[in-house]
Image (cartoon, rainbow over all chains, first blue to last red):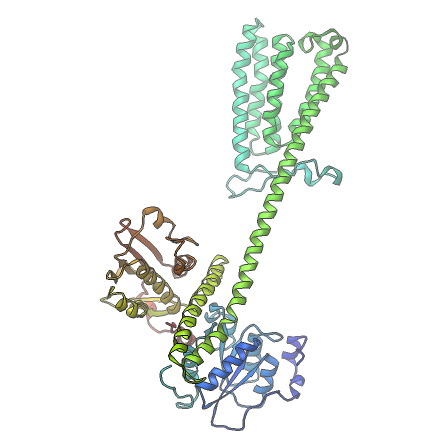
Length: 163
Length: 461
């Protein structure tokens, strides 16, 4: 997927770029918890997806490499939790957050970052509407705890028992 | 240019080099060498020397049987110049030129009072390197002009007071030019000398700056790049260990244990480097939320419950009251884990680690006392500096960044961290003091500050 050359142009557009269908798609199961991973590092993306699928079998986990793909998936479908890498090629994490707010995407965003200062309430991501920060390297137990707190319906992401 | 008296590092005045044409640049000093402080101390010395010439000239003149009034007039010249140099002491160029002029005048006066003895010219050749202490070309230019004009004029009026051989007495201006030519030689040699020194220093500074820049860039990129692969490692280790990828044999489980232990160590090292970099760059910042320091300390102590049992170390935590402070629970957890980790490292099996905390004078004070090997006073003094290792050969200790980072975090909270030891073999005490949250500020916790911190704030063990 070629990245848009101007993130600002993409932000202000009425989404012509998004007319193309996303490369992955949600299953049409409205009951499942939907988690979207936005991460450009392939191994982190794949292992996050695999680990969450293993530990949260009741959740549907999709993973995309950049914000444009994320926009495609968030445009017309429900998503509960977005795990967002803040340093992305093309659109940055905070720009995706701004876009989500403008288009009233209700998903809760968890920033996954190596920079703990992103958790400060004054950081651009927190001001942009992120609800939590998970530090890299990701500790799976900690991430699962955060997801359980944010899951919309009790039981949707039921605990699996001790890790 | 005016002299800035109070500036921490007053910039040296722009030298002639800054305005010199290109072909002169390699030989003219840039005037970079003398700081205000160094210049002032040199100027003070030269003024003292000049003042000392006043009585010396008086004594010498009277001894040579000159008329006292004549001698007083001659001695008055350096006195007036010294006072003028003091009067203009805030103008480097003017003041140094006046003082230099005074010293060169002393040479001429002494030659004159001696009756034109050639040996008195040695005085002049001592004064030249002394005025070269200013690292300024103006006094030198003055010296050349002074010698040429003085010898020419005086040689014409009163030849024997400056020259002592027939050809010079017959042709005073020719010999004035010969004298001036040698002075020019000395001046050119000195100026070129400064320039060479400056160039050498420039090269050294540039190369030091370059290597510092390289080291910083290397650390910043490598620590970030080293951090990236840790996430897939962590997740796959977790999946293997939880047997989501299939059942494990005993030997595989042991092998995983080794991998995991070293993965944890690598994670800590990379994290410490990144934190130390942020601390150095002033980018390390902390979340501020109301919390009970007692809980933070207790949670940190729980991390050491298992090691304490295994090593028969009596871990005693006594915190009688809640300690409301404002801060970053994750960061403070890190601080106390670090301090307790050190206490456990240096305490032998069967020893004791005591943790106490109480409110005292508006502060929450936490003390961690161990019965370990203790420290010598000079070790205590260096404890919170980076790369300090009590025992550099012990590879398990990491890089010695832990206490440096802890101090940075405590500083960010407006608190204090300190250590004391009664000496080697007598244990050590670490103390952390944080400002207590006042009752008024404790009410009405803003919910916005709370949500991210709750989700992100639980420290991982």
